[in-house]
Image (cartoon, rainbow, N blue to C red; front, top):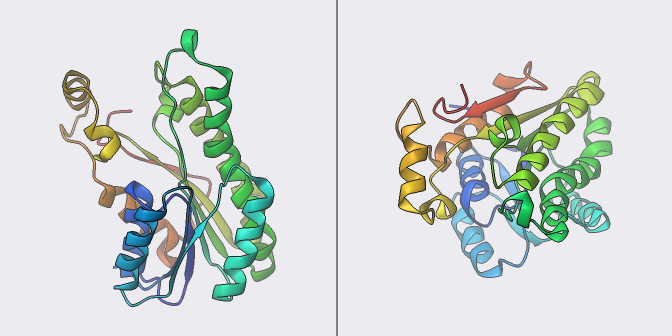
Length: 248
């Protein structure tokens, strides 16, 4: 099993869902956890308790990652509280799904600002710290729709495709400083959001997956744990699909 003892991970959007799953996995492997949420205080409090039970240092921070100055401020606060940071997981994201015909400009902008610009903001905020320490792991949560596109998700697909381009660029910029940057592209993962899908849409999606089942949060968390570990030290600029084969 991978070892993260003594390392500090910053994880955005970790009060529930995939982000929470990654935080729990990292904590199980010994990492201290600084996690971000925005307007989700009740879930954040519960997540903080669950993480603390793993015997690691944990603290929740409320931050809108779409806000450049707020992102810089929270990273400075985390480094002050924890001493340093070793891993950044950019997971925070929102959806505003609808066809382009009925998509409002505000819906496009909101998804780009949180999903893509938020990833840039947090990466920018840790950039100098990782450069100075000459080590670091950046793990960005993209999506298979960033590779394939999807009707009704032009804003989301654009943001997730942008994250892939950003990941590859950061990998080239920071490689000489022993900092890796990789992206995970989840497919159909069992979460509260996918559980709320209409049954016919859910069945159609499952039928298109070669493995004939949805993925789990643990599938994504295990991939993130590998990328955060020393075992992945020679992997950078990659996009790892965790999708049961749906995007083959």
